[in-house]
Length: 373
Ligand code: NDP
Ligand code: MG
Image (cartoon, rainbow, N blue to C red):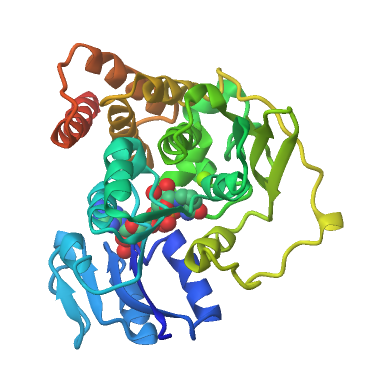
């Protein structure tokens, strides 16, 4: 059998680069056929050369004419996903992940899904399209990848608990949070990730997005889903069986594990990293999520339970607020208060329930936030 043809959307990001480590270790099994990137053309050019990529899409309109030669250039992600491939890793950040995930699901493809915003915004549509068209949806997000593995062969699930590091500000004095700098928020204690998700980890919006993602992906009600702070980030998910007993899925915090798992599934992935010996692991501790420190987490869970356009509103408001925070246009605590205002404002709007309505709600929330900046 020939090598599997892989497409990576968002190859220049943190997940994209971790995926390349797996391809480097297993180059006789995978071939990087297509890539997308947004602005980092230096890295994209290096990747094209090293992996002899044949198809490319640059999603940023400002960069459109600076392309490496000898490569088929696609005008958008939809066109890139029309090429022949075996699996696509969706590792772009934000709601821009929705259309490629939906499109690959309609095409019945094998989808390795890192982008969580797509399921948050359009979970029911993507899951339905995948089911109808025989697409395989494999979660790369570490917690979901662990839940996926824990659920295999399990018939009785009482509860699924995903863990959160607590982010960069877990121990920061509460009174100082309003003035905290971008630099401090980006100092994640355990994971090295892109800027947006690192801010989402500090606010714990990330964990709310992940609970919503888990709700759609595993078809679990919110009563069966929970999240806990686990500062060491070694345990990624916990499954409680009906008899009350727990199973943990444990590995050191590195996305290579879940990326490799999805690339090789249903075969088991070879060892790519040297696993930490159990007796060298840190002491594993767990604690509940404080409302005062992480108000946006609770807003996100409520938006998830509300269903309809509310997860999309929560996600879009957060994306705009985080971009403004990263640009130093608003303070840190303003992220959660802006999200709250957008969710309240959305209550008096009359959104429908189609895919188009989700995009309309997304745009409405972005405009709502922009007007308040
Ligand atoms: P990064 O910010 O590191 O990378 C994002 C990628 O998306 C880059 O390739 C970037 O291109 C591209 N991109 C940026 N803006 C756009 C846009 N408007 N349209 C298309 N592509 C764009 O993010 P991460 O790798 O950290 O995260 C990617 C996704 O995976 C997110 O949804 C995140 O929540 C999820 N995830 C990430 C984890 C992690 O460990 N990093 C863990 C679990 C989930 P360029 O750099 O060329 O501008
Ligand atoms: Mg995660």
